Image 1 (cartoon, one colour):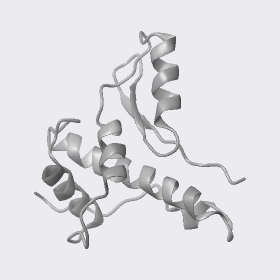
Image 2 (cartoon, rainbow, N blue to C red):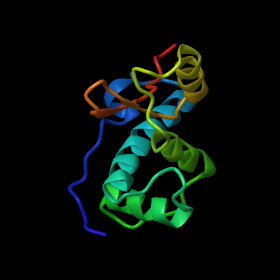
Image 3 (tube, rainbow, N blue to C red):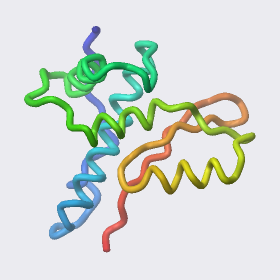
Image 4 (cartoon, helix red, strand yellow):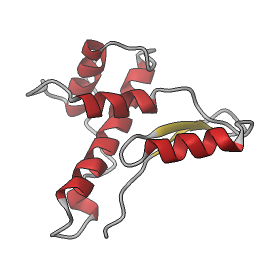
Length: 128
């Protein structure tokens, strides 16, 4: 895989004040990483059915460095959530509600606008 420039939507350190509970920071960082990895995976033609090794390769590309440890089950689930079928304007309200509330606290969801442009909705935790 081609190495790309490292990008980020920012880690918890960039958004939350000192003293923010660790769980909130981990959720934030997992969601941020998942969108970056999912964007790379989509460029490689992968979807939620990609195997763990393929997603790990995309994560290494996102970090521009070899992974120090395997991706956790929670991180893999967050990446697969971001790679799931996109919600769109025609999605049933119940499906949207289920996707949004089922994604909390750290699983991005893919959505497509009326023009087909896709976006990730990223659950960034609010500080208590």
